[in-house]
Amino acid sequence: MFDKVLIANRGEIALRIHRACREMGIRTVAIHSQADELAMHVRLADEAICIGPPSAAQSYLNVPAILSAAEISGVDAIHPGYGFLSENANFAEIVTDHGIKFIGPSADHIRLMGDKIAARDTAQKLGIPVVPGSDGDLESAEQAEAFAESIGYPVLLKAASGGGGRGMKVVEAQEDMAEAFSTVRSEAKAAFGDDTVYLEKYLGTPRHIEVQVLADTHGNVLHLGERDCSLQRRHQKVLEEAPSPALNDQDRERIGAIVSKAIGEMGYEGVGTVEFLYENGEFYFIEMNTRIQVEHPVTEMITGIDLVRQQIRVAAGLPVEYLQDEITFSGHSIECRINAEDPRTFVPTPGLVTDYHPPGGLDVRVDSALYAGYSVPPYYDSLIAKLIVHGKSRNGCLMRLRRALEEFVVDGVSTTIPLHAELIENPDFLDGVYNIHWLEEYLAASDSE
Ligand code: ADP
Image 1 (cartoon, rainbow, N blue to C red):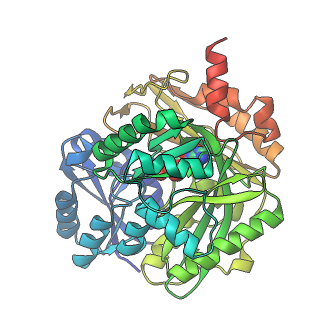
Image 2 (cartoon, rainbow, N blue to C red; image 1 turned 60 degrees about the horizontal axis):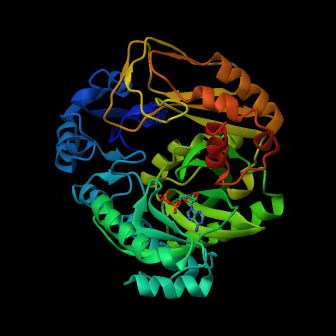
């Protein structure tokens, strides 16, 4: 097992990784920007190294500075968390070349899945159903029109290197294609340095269902059920739950088996998430994330498995501690992503947290790096806490979530806590009948009231 791990991240996920390491007897090294000197991950880690100015480009994305920190502190491994460098194949490669273990899959697998066209192609070859679309990049708006014609409008133009809900545009009809095509191309070039674009059928009422996988270097491949992440705004997840209210056991088994088989054939190592849209009983692959995800705790809550611990074990060459038939799903779990944002306009609200009182009690988990007196910096993602609750049933889980949201106090900055409290009272949400467009429609309707 590793002796010392560098955590190449910040915020709640840095803390989450630190906790797993501590429980495994592994020492931790925090890195931080000048803006994060007083951050919780810095306070808790065994060692901390400042790697640059506040901007992410100069700190959490600064590969030479992170490598120097790793060398100076003499770590055996680097955990990238999510975001930042977690899906950067070049970073994984450089880390490996320096004789340090990158806690994640191989650089080749990261690269393959980071290119959405290559990922689609791989998925198809491995027997995973994909959304109907262009098999490969589109060279011109005319080619895009021809494809769109063959599968029918509306279609979704997507950047091959896109992520975080960016680099996508819906095209309703042929007359809009030429303009949309050049917009997505130039936006993709600017945001991702790659203007490769492809298209997919735009599904009207799907749910976002993703399957958690865990594979080691001893040939063990497990799936840990699904998460339903259909509550989204701007293609970004707001609340996640497991199990999905839309799946039955047969669907669950079917998709789990398809995914496990594919992951095994790929020779994939570590944790990963295979994302699907689910409509009319059918699953359609959209992408694979080759890292730990923000919403991993809902899976932990219903399986009792510490995914970060397993991820670190696998990276150290140890087998996962479970067999597929030992994995059972107990009860229901929901996660609310709490952002330092205005709950209506979603404008970020960085600033001083004057008071902080997280909820507690049985089956209530808060993953957060906040404390009273902490100042939320304006430079990074606005996620400040995740509230995750568990209940015996979905209804029990909702009752507990309601109570936990009521208890949650974050003073000084506006947060999305009131939005969550409102959403979980909505009849559609209570009935579990919502798709990926539901939240935007709900917000648009309530804004016009
Ligand atoms: P990203 O890498 O930016 O997260 P994804 O491909 O995972 O992009 O898609 C993010 C979200 O965009 C999905 O969860 C879904 O809400 C929406 N989306 C993606 N593909 C489609 C599609 N073909 N039809 C309708 N919505 C889609």
